[in-house]
Image 1 (cartoon, rainbow, N blue to C red):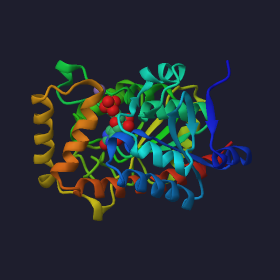
Image 2 (cartoon, rainbow, N blue to C red):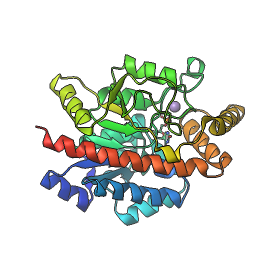
Image 3 (cartoon, helix red, strand yellow):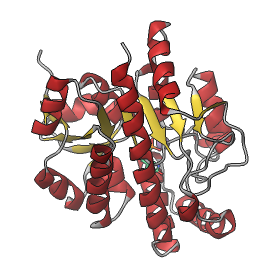
Length: 304
Ligand code: PSU
Ligand code: MN
């Protein structure tokens, strides 16, 4: 069976010439940010990857095919579409087999990246262990994907909507290297520090690329999680964001929001409660991650 995989002209050319490639997710576009900032940000992130000397491949499922790289028109359509499916590992094959359309989470984007031969991926925040996971068992499939799919994922840490200590514990159990970039602390999305030390620290993109190759040489499955702190000027003080996080969590609980709807609900409510402040920070950190990921991708193509 041939894979239902379509490369954009830009990505096809990059593959043919061996140029560095960076995967980008689409759930951040459909479920993570409102229109039109979602589409503007997606374009700016692609441009940041290009400015860093790599080629962006935004992933999405359109009419039953995996698209590695979206055209400008496809990006516009996806960014304005209503009720787009949010696809994780469990949903991918069913969506493709039924000719569906959907946005890829971190887990699904990693799977698509591997199929497209792409080893690096930039995003904002990853899914993790939700607060109350000991009762609701809500643990994002992103964590288990990192344990089995060989893609280095660059994020800004995890949001405090999650239980960060438990998230780091699960990553450790799953054997996922968690590397803080340029500092000792694990960053927490809007804040440069979560107050916890990251298990690993690296200061240079070349080290991250070398570690990626070494994992493969050792025959270890899975990828790496790089946690890149938000730029200082975009940080939101925890005293400012914490009450909004607590309010959003309480509303989710009161409304019985569960399963796949939890993360998008919380992101949307925090955006509303901060009157857009969280969005400006979110955009700044994603751009920052795109720049770092392009550097890692450029280092990777230098290695055998
Ligand atoms: N966290 C964010 N922004 C996001 C997401 C998470 O700060 O956009 C999205 C990503 O696509 C991530 C997904 O992979 O939500 C996780 O969803 P869940 O918790 O349902 O696995
Ligand atoms: Mn979940």
